[in-house]
Image (cartoon, rainbow, N blue to C red; front, side, top):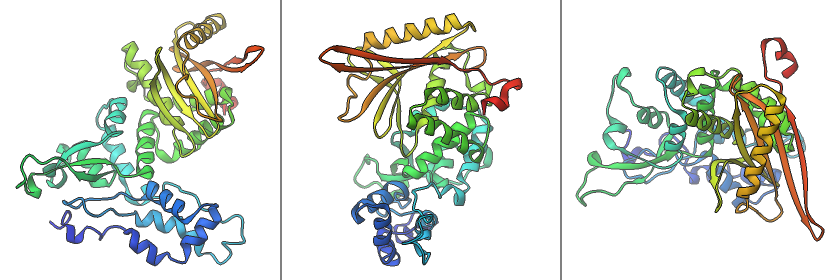
Length: 378
């Protein structure tokens, strides 16, 4: 078995030196097209496409050849420097070549998993023993760690602390993480597709609608776009336990919002309390409070919007998130238990001046997507 031998560690990817040599002519052209320095280009390439490592010394980090080739492909066009349509983007190319999404999706579908726990587990390093990484297993005995390692979603970052200096490769454990941003993004998309009861290709256009709505600050559109995903979601991912159900919504919305342009995190604490979700764009910080409601009356929904706003004021959500030049906006989303969709929203923007605090408030109701209004909701 040569798969983890250091001598063969660079067979399945590009090293940085190989890229510097093979793409020498393309690198400055790419940086110039993107309006960044060569050093900044390398930072982006490393963040998105580097990090594959499977040798038992954790000594060689590799870039995905498929992703690197696809990223630089437009540069090879003779008209690259003059044709505006030839753009470079840090897209998630790797999943198209690896078949990893299909393997993970199949594994999840055959078992009932708590997606919130999965996301929490694999958002930080995990320790995996050498035997787990190398031992052949039967299809009905394979573990999620093995699926993720053998598909390339998890890569070795370093050798875990060894119990004895004389430990051999066979007795080692490794600290493993999601390989890079490209892989982590696709991992999250597979989890969301599993929750939304669809596949990755079908979910991409809907995700773009969610992220576009957030980037332009259209919360009414955001609610409708989230509903496009929620209305197809698996009923069995929403635990009947009330606390767990709210946690699932937090996870679902976070997965929908996270992108290269949006940094989203849930259960963000300050010195007064904890808001459900925070999404940061280039110029705005959105602090979300999620509320669930059983009643379907407009009055009840607006009353709950008022209650949530008072909670946000009391706990001063986002007071520890202020960044220079960024606007803080509070957002309340009310979720209907009957339809399992967003049914109301509110934004609160506070500005301060010598005259005092000015509050700008917008809100509205969101019509749930049903058979009779599906076309109108799109």
